[in-house]
Length: 111
Image (cartoon, rainbow, N blue to C red):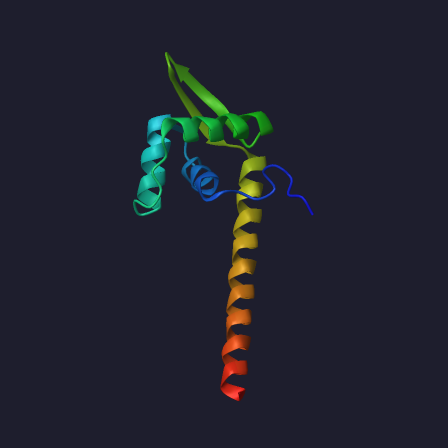
């Protein structure tokens, strides 16, 4: 079955939504993502603003302030629900992985 756009999130998208639980501008978002991902994810401007544009178009975030070229954003109720759904999906994936690995280990011991 084909995946609907924004039905699941890329890792970068997930962290952008985490960062936008507080109002932030682009550079603040990039810095927060870097911090909460323990330096694993460093968003370039092209990637960040593509994600922000997609999210804003879908109603997942809202622009809250414009000061010259500086724009600030905040997650919407719809975006927060998407983030919660994604968290539950990831938790289920972890559980499925643990179960499958446990079955494999059990089967190997029986052989």
